[in-house]
Length: 297
Image (cartoon, rainbow, N blue to C red; front, side, top):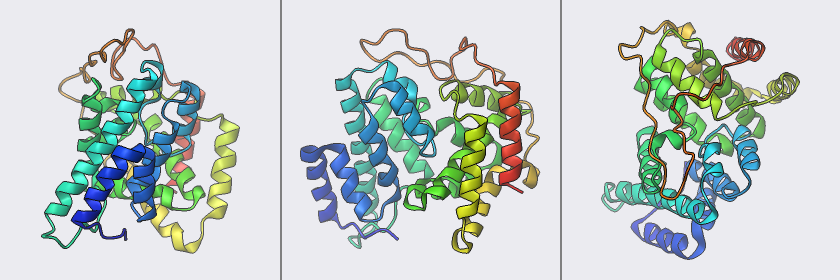
């Protein structure tokens, strides 16, 4: 359980964010046991690095950051503003939640709807959209196919995954990638479009040999204390086991439309825009399908 945040703590956090920036702000909250700041700190620390470094970071941390494509179109000052605005949106939600507790203090971290809202607010303040959150498409697909309850359980595990042993994070990361590859062959047109758009912005996740190495090492590291928890998380993504794998064909074959470019940015293509030309390699898709079966067996 995270430490209780009193109204005075919220005010102090605001001063820390203003004077010390997003990284110091997240570091303070991470030390108090909050899961969202634990991985937000890592994303904030890597934002502004070359695109390939940022993309590599996202591939290794449950893919919970801002889309790697953003690093190719934003300059340093725009990245700094984006980083600050997302942190500010998170603080606003914490403040709002603390006021609902009648002075008893805040005792929980953000749920999936609140996380969705804070990223939407922060991104839109910078001329972007919620689609630029790298978890947008995985969450949208899971909600569409499995519903809000499964989505919430998935988020709670993933939100706190960086506070778990590293091998648990690796398993969660691989399972999320496998889930998205699987959806490129889904019966639901919209799910296929979203999965393909997401993978086009996260290409060449890992070579097959690296997948096998990471998977074997992670599975060997699981202990009795974490095994049941991990298995439950993996089951959330195994939709066919729950009779949810054959969704109806979407009425509207059109996916979400591309968004407008941020001011001063040219060459912008929305994450769901057509024309990326990317298609899942048959061998890679087969590897990830096999991976998903192994992870959920």
